Amino acid sequence: MHKGIRRALTALTGLVAAGLLTAGLPAQTAQAASGAERCPKGYFCGFSGTSGDGEMFKTNKDLATLGSWDNKIRSLVNRAGNYACAYSEPNYDLTGEGADFLRESPNASSGEYGFTPYMDRRISSIRFVRTDRECWLNAYPRWWADPAAAPAGFGDLNRDLVPDVLVRDMAGRLWRLPGDGTGRLVGSGWNSMTAMTRHGDLTGDGDEDLLARDTAGQLWLYPGTGRGGFGTRKLVGGGWQVMRQIAAAGDLNGDGRGDLLARDSAGKLWMYPGNGRAFGSRKLVGGGWQVMNALLGPGDLNGDKRPDLLARDTAGKLWLYPGNGRGAFGSRTLVGGGWQVMENFVAVGSYNGSTLNDVLTVTNERHRGGHPGWLLGYRGTGGTPPFRASEELDGDWWGLNGAW
Image (cartoon, rainbow, N blue to C red; front, top):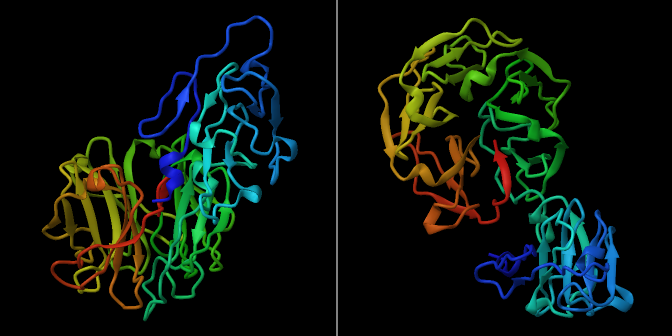
């Protein structure tokens, strides 16, 4: 992990971050505006003294160099609305030997300040970013994949046979990761969605679509364009706030249209059959599903050409429910335990160029005793067990607000 993660500072009054040589100092109480309270709202301020005292520097814009304030700042505060990144080198450079930075959370209160010994009189450039990742990483993580040997029917948003992944950053921006290590912005404002799911075509045009539920409980269909983006959304309906999980799962009933699974607050699992426009009348799959806290439609995992369902229970066990082709499932089999360390499950088809369906997961803070943000790949076998041992694909999938 980058050294900046270990050294990043949130300089708030009275806060001492474990493992950092950083101390938050109490605000001055003098009546005259001579301390950190001089810093106006909306600005990052640096001071020539260690206690928010001395001369004051302020900016609300990115500065590749600091001019006369180069290597002069001792204490500081960020009252701007975005994260402030302060770098030891000009031009926000982190490539040189000994280059370092600190990260300041936004919207500090008046009078707060911090002093950081390891960056004392070492700040040479400052920039503002929407998320804390962006001080030294992109807003989106890296995703690399090979073209599949054949279309999976899901996972590919631009018809290039390379599985795409969608991620949402903490600022609410939705990004498409096309499998080449880059990211493409889909749009902003997606933090208004409380649930999202995707698995193939729902409208009959052959392009993968996206379903998203907003805070009012309305479910929206975003039709895929086949070029990596989405067209004008269409309202599926309201009242979906009663559903604890929703999972697009492919064609479960054999009619050639993509279907949706949803688990309500009473623990009932419902199948909503696709009709090429939205969904028909729902059918009850069964009760007792309140013990499941994650659902994923991974496609066919056992080689019978029918889409299956993965479900994780509250004990961390992952179960495979084989689809029966009639809108329901056969007897479940245990994939394994320990899956409570996963924050996200993502169905992608094949990411390694085969025809077998794989699954991705993103770890939470319980992974290996405190290693969130690992992207793990589980390559499908087409049989039993359904996956090979996990592969660590990338360690910088932290600080996100969902992956699909």
